Length: 104
Image (cartoon, rainbow, N blue to C red; front, side):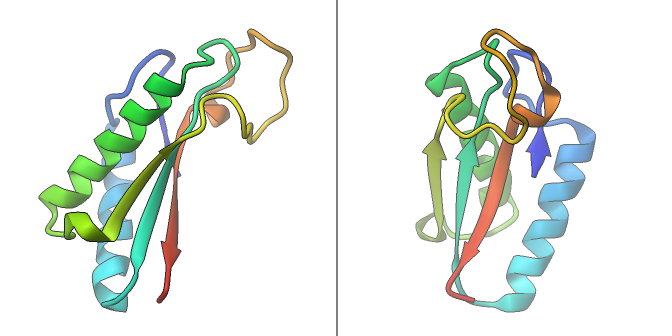
């Protein structure tokens, strides 16, 4: 997972390292597809922001040579919280992009 600052879709240095590690694994596996699912916390509660986060991760993977037809993006907003919180709560663990590899 890659985590984000409140209200942001910019990938941090730690997030870049996580994506780099995923890409290295993806190339070692040699087959499959990846789904990137963007999320927000309940204070952000924004499907467009969660999509922007997933697209930012996709752009990084594209730049590393993973073909576009092997990457899907999904936006969930605050619908699939990692940590259950009351509405309007800022929680850094909920501001994330998850990577799921299919068909290894």
